[in-house]
Every structure is written in structure tokens, then in C-alpha cells.
Length: 176
Length: 456
Image (cartoon, rainbow over all chains, first blue to last red; front, top):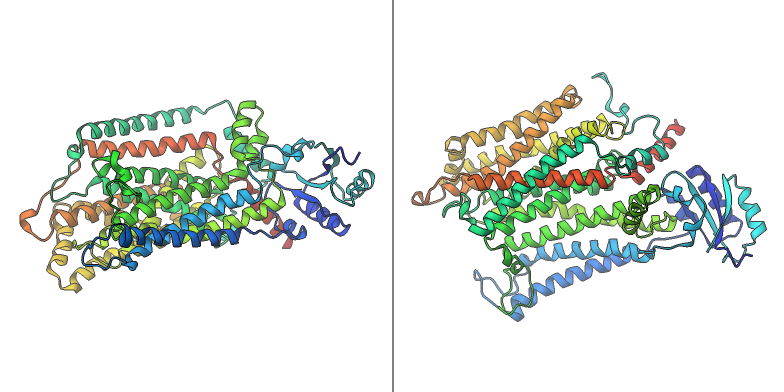
């Protein structure tokens, strides 16, 4: 049976309850699980030992923007079409700083948004958890904890009993 | 609310709000078949003015910039004034969403969404003006660096090109920031909607957001980084706009304090516009629990602070003109104060310098109609300020033989008023189809406030 379901989902009424439940599940040895909440709760990611990686990508994006911005201006003003304007040197870098700055922000910002979406696997129109009962309330006022059947410690009966012990409003199966 | 109450005691959120009520109140405005009559009326009027804008643009494209009041001496007129005015208004949205996020100012949560919307609509208007001001807008793509058959590149040493980069970066980042904030709320709208088509549309924009804690962590980190990037960006944008003036050698433009002067003026006018919009919107949609008197008071304080910087700049402008010993600079100020545009100058001093001084008093900051009047006054004053900067400096420059008088024609005014209609029409559409208040941040606020309650 454990192969045919995606996992078990427990519904909670408050952020405190879901945080407690997640902590207990972690201590009980479960690893393949995820908490779903209507708004960000920092403790949850800490309990799940998840560290966001987006900052490295953003830094890289900013670097590419800066180098690209300067490269563009250098290429246009020095290599492609050198033209003396106002007696300035071809590579009049102080005048190039502003565009370098803007390009840094532009590329880093684009990477921040699309990188964040990409790292989280979006767009993802279908996900098993959407099959869970009442899951549409996750974006309103309910808090959910899912333990996946892929977890090595998962057992339909024992995991259900464990989740029931965490004082949820309801525990149901999630179809894949 | 008595005038002696400590501002900290006025909540940033009305009493009795829960996660569910926040969701239901905000989505209730959108997910309903009933469009309020007032909405239809307001949108209808704004739409008419939007048509006026399109009509003015059509006439402009057919006949050229000759229909404007520009002449050889005053080659920068309404188009540049309106450009600077609209960009400035946009700045408050980014300031509220980025800078106040970095400073962890929780009161921003309920006003950031529509302030960001306001930013995007204002910058859309701002972007229009330089393009049509080129005279041949169908060649606007020449502004972008691309390997063209003409073999020429744009002039990278010119502030006008810096502007192209600054404004396009600003539009892109503001739009991304706005959309990113909307993703979890799109998911809420998708989940709350019962109409299949509506569900699907919001679902597409939600990208499948499901509120997983790992996604939230990634999301929050990205939002923080984006805020950290947008903060210097917003300061740079109006600085670059001011370089359009400061880098030239025209008296009244050629000063080093123009960038901070422009940036604070932008925030000043932006907050005035947020206030002008927030007061009627919260009344019409009964959102007083979310946009409380505390919000208006805080915005009034920001207006007062930035207004003082702007007023200081007006005074310094006069001082520098005198202290420079330069006869052209001295004449410029003399001409502003006593020349043909003197009424405009004194009106701007009154609206931007004198009237905001009322905000020192708590009674005034708590008086909603008066706040509305002051914010409207600042909107007018900031437009006049840009008009004074652009026009009075140009119309009597170095050589008296080139002196001329400038005034907007019918088409100048119709286009300007038309863009206001466009702006308001977009805002009405926004209020009807998108959540005007950031729901997930409001729920976070409910959560934080409940914790704070327990500690005491």
C-alpha cells in the first residue's frame, strides 16, 4: 500500500502546531517530508535543515552583468567604432561606471527572481500534494505536514499513528 | 482617537483580524461578480482621459512635435517635466517595498502592493515621454546598443543614455519584484476561486506555488536580495535623471547637489501620491483595518522629512547662486523669483516648502482630509518644481538674444492630463483583478503580532 500513495498529510490549525509537529517528525527520524504554510515560517526550513542557495547565483549574475556591461561599452567605444568625443580617451571608464552599475543590478535581479523559481522547480502545474483533502486551504489559514511514502521509515500504519499523536485536525492519504 | 495618544499605541492592523479574515477580505474584493458602481464610474472617467492620451498621441505622431509649445530656446518642455515627475512618483513604491523591507518596518506590509503597482504604472508613463520627445518614436530602438548596419553605437558617455539604462533596469526590476510578491497571492486566488476559468487564469500566474517551507525559505532569501539590489537602484535612477541636467552647463542645472535633491524630491512626491491614492481607496473598500491611521501618520512623517530636505535644497540653490559670484547663476535665481514664471516658483515654495510644515503637528497628521489636501498640494508642487527647473533655466540662458517665452499648448496639457487618466485607469483595473494588499505578508504580520501579545 505504501507504494500506491504519495504520503500522509496532517492538517494543523496554527503555525505553532505545525512547527512542533515538524520538529517531532524530524526527531522521530523522518527525512522525506515537507511542511506547507500560508506564509513563510523561518523555523520550518531550519528544522528541515534546508539552506537557500540563491545568493550564489545572484552574485554570479551580478558579476556577469558588471563584466558584460563594461565589455559592451569597451567593445563599442574602443574596438568596434573608436570615435574621439570631447577629447576623451576611447576607454573613458569613469563615464562607463553608471551603465556597469545598472547592468549589475539588472542581471542580478533577473537571476534572483528566475533563479529562485528555477531552484524550487517552478513552474510546476501539477504536484501530488494538490490531491490532498482540503489542501486549497493551505493558502488561506491551514498548515500541513506531509511525510512522503518514499521515506525509509514510512509505514502506512505507524506513520499514521505517529501523525495522529501530534494533535492534528485530520490525517489523510495523499494520492500520487 | 484622541490627539494625545502615543503613535505606537495605534495598531498597524485593526483588531480581530485572523489569517482567514485577511484572506477573505482581500480576495472578496476580486472574486466577486459584483463590480461596485463607484468602480465603474471611476474607471469610466479615467478611461475617457486615457482616450484623450491616445488621441493626443495620434495627433502628435501625425503632425510631429510642432504641436507642442517648444521653441528653439526651450527645447525641453512638458515632455521632460512630465518624465521627471512620473519617475519621481514611482520611487515611493520601491522605497516602501525595498528599503522599508530591509529596515524591517512591518507597517509597510499593507501598503507595499499598491505602492508597487503605482510605481509600475507611473514608470510606464515616464518611459513614454522621452520616447515621444525624440520626435521620431518609431526609431526609439536606436537608443539601445545593438550591432546595427549603421555601424554606430549609442554615446555611452552621455547621461541621456545612462537614463535609458537606468529607467529600463528600473522598470524590469520593479515588475519582477511586483510579480514575485504576487506569486503566493496568485496561489491564494487560485485556491479561493470557484469559477473554473478564473481559477485557471490565477493558477497559471501562480506557477504551481504550494507554500512549501523550502520554497518559502528560497523565496524569502531572494526577496531580501532583490530588496538589497533595488535600494541602490532607486537612488541611482533619480540621480541619473538629475545628471541629465547637472552634467550640462546651463545655469541652474549645473550643480553638484542635484542628485540628492532629486532623489529626496522623488521620494517626497512618491509618498504624496501614495497618500493621495491610499486615502480614497481605503475609504471606498473599507480597508481601514489594514491601512490604519498609523500608516498615514508614518507616511506623513516620511513626507515631512523628505520635504525638509527638498526645502533645504531650494534654499541652498539660492545661496549657491549668490555665493558662486557667477552673474548667470545669480540672474537665474533672480529671474525665477521675479521673472515671468515667478508665480509658479512661489507656488512651488508654498506647496513643497511651507504647507508640509503643518505635518510637524500630530493633530494634522491625524486629520485625514487635511492630509489629503497636503498630499495633493505636494503633487502639484513637485510638478511645478520640475517645470521651474526645466523651463526657467532654459528660457533665459546666457545670450539675451536667444531669450524666449515658453508655455504648454492644448496638446501639451491634453497629453499630460491623459497620462494621469491612463495611470488611474490602470490602478482601477489593478484594484479589480489583483489583491491590493499583500496577503501572505499580512498573515505574517498577524502571526508576529499574536506572538508579541503573548510575550507581554
